[in-house]
Length: 360
Image (cartoon, rainbow, N blue to C red):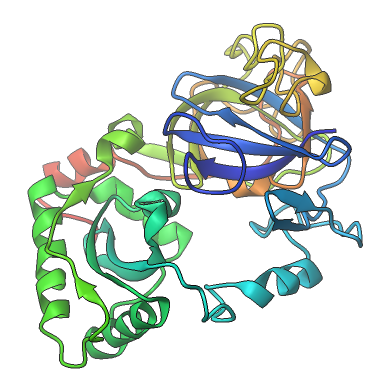
């Protein structure tokens, strides 16, 4: 069985990579193989969760070490590991400060998610902007480059001296996407923080400063394809189905136009109902394909989501798919919980019409 290992972008995680874009990873423990499937705009999805959502285990030396406990995960949590596997993972983790001897050079970055939402972070220099894309950063600029501990000191310095955080909530990021100012204003806000950071006393001597250079991900993320009203998909449960068409992807989020009764989204990802990972059979069927078998719905809608109105746009945290075996949907509509609509890109125009600016 091919089990989903969650969202990633090319160059942004373990496993095969191809052209830059959002994708889902898959792993077959029986074969010891990992694959990916792209999620471009226009791709039609129709899949159901099968069995139980299991801990993915630990990624080591280019392969997954399956969770020895067979731990079952909460379908509403973005975590893809049980507590014991996560503890093992963090025993050699830069994020947990348990890998201080990493000899690779690191980059310190400033990431922009919306007006007033700027954070500082570090990433291995060899990864380039992949970490920024994974987080859904709308724009960014590099601040410095050097040894890991120097990068850590710079990150801490910005937090203590300028109160720059190192994270934002998923809800804050999503809301900010609906109230983005022009690119010039984003660049100016980043430039101001970049300048302030470089003027701080106590800058690590071994951290080489990087001149300000603004980079924007609006086109990559297709932010203009996110409408004004965006619902939110909840977590999967056994038998729950999602049927819709991909509008765009931002970080771990996938925006879908949901099918509803009378508004079926044709076939699944593959032409005959399946989805193959890169290097696999992209036109196979069901779980015989390379990536777990997204399929086209064939029967009537069922379950709690059977009344979903066709055309509703909803955002899905693709991390909630990790750990599931995903097979072809039996129905024609989404049956996972769909929460109330929120703000999207189109909200900006309505706010402007009322004479308001931005989100805050």
